[in-house]
Each structure stands twice: as C-alpha cells, then as structure tokens.
Image (cartoon, rainbow, N blue to C red; front, side):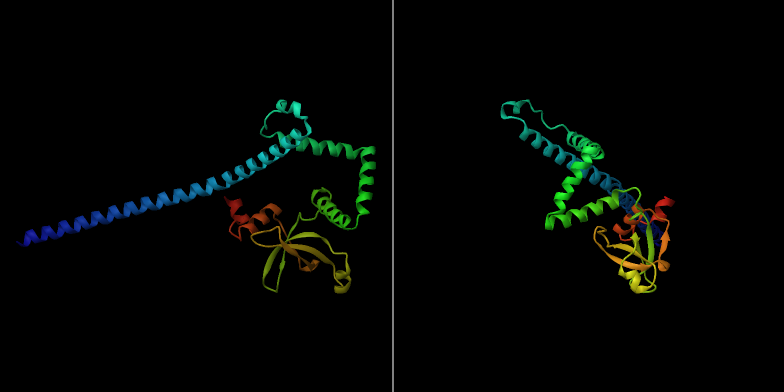
Length: 235
C-alpha cells in the first residue's frame, strides 16, 4: 500500500512539473510574440506615417495644380486636360520656384522685386507682416547665417537645472548695455512641440556649446528625452 501511495505522489509531482514547464513555455512564447508585435509597430509606424503624409502632400499639390490648370483652360478644351498625374504638382511647384528665382536674379527681375517691395512697404499692416516673414526666411535659408545652427546648453530656470537651446545670434540691444556683459539670444523650444518656445538672453560666459546637430537636438526634445543622441550613435 505504501508503494502505491508513493507512486501516486510521484506521479502527481511529475504531472505538476510538466504542467509548470508547459506553462513557462507558453509564457515565454507569449512574451516573444508580444515583443515581436511591438517591434513590428516600432518599425512599421514611422515609415507608414511618413509615406502617408508624403502621399497626402503630393496628392494635395496635384489636385491644387489640376484645379488651377482646369480653371485656365477654356471650357471647350476642358476634355483635353489630362487627369491628375502623381507628382506633377511637385514638379510644377519646383519649376515655378526655380523660374521665379532665375527671374529675380536678373536686372529686370530685381527692378520689379524692388518695385513690389516698395509698394508693400507703403501698406500699414501688411508691411510689418511682410518684413517679419522676409527676415525669418532670410535667416533660415541663408547659408551665410549661423542662426539656429548651433545647439547650446545653459542653466535655466535656476542654477543646477540645465536646458537645451538654439543659438539665434548675438544680442545687440539694450540688454547688453544694461547687463554690462556680452549677451546671446537663445531660443528655448518646448516639449514635445518644438515649434513653440520662448526667447532668453544669456551671458555668453554661461553658455556651453554642444557638439550636437540641430536635428538630433530636436529629436531629443520631441521624444521628451527618450531618443538620446548618444544611444543612437552606439546603435
């Protein structure tokens, strides 16, 4: 009788161990499937979103150009206008910018450009908006300008707390005169939307220049510190 009981106990123990092993195998399998699932999302989502946004932009440009062409063509020739061709709007837009740039670079183009600017500057409200937009585009598109091309690090809003900023230039206003120091204009973007932010005036001696590209700094800010430039270089 004792042998029978011992065998029954052993059989129960063996079945329990087998059950635990099977459970562990299924748990590991479920964990792997879950990891594969999230990895697939991580790999696919950025590419899919980027392609979708590019597709929507191309289609929006194509439809806008088609409507413009369709409005310029007389009604009797409307049937001869082809349907929208993917990418046609982008090509026409690029060619338009190139042709306008070529025209503006010539003597006649500069004359009309100066004449147009003179007329715009005579308008009270529009002149202020145009002047601001012109300065912003010249700042960002000029290859000779170093604005927003240097990432800096400084203590803000108090000592011991550090923050990233983009150097926008040297301060030549009353701030430097009042402080008696050489000041820098630094734009501090907000997280996770770097298009908004605020401007601060920081003494040049308190600013640390960082060997980081503006693109890496923006990724770091947008991701709330999750995407680290150092980790990206290691990968």
